[in-house]
Length: 69
View 1 (cartoon, one colour):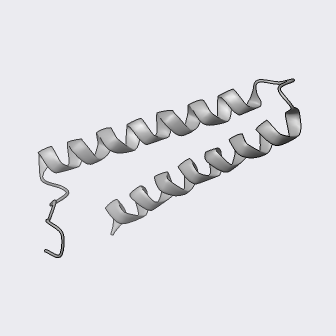
View 2 (cartoon, helix red, strand yellow; view 1 turned 135 degrees about the vertical axis):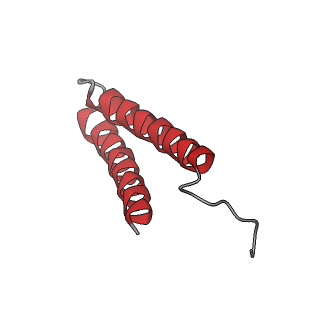
């Protein structure tokens, strides 16, 4: 249950930063670096989530399954 909540929290944070990047891109018109920072945070969160999933699979905390399995 905790694994699922952690993954969902990461996905929500990634979506928030993606939306923030879009908002800043439209509202700032290139005058600030807020778009760059929001999209950088999104990339970092995505990489951290992928690494955590790989570590979870390697340690046995997450059991991968096939499609429909």
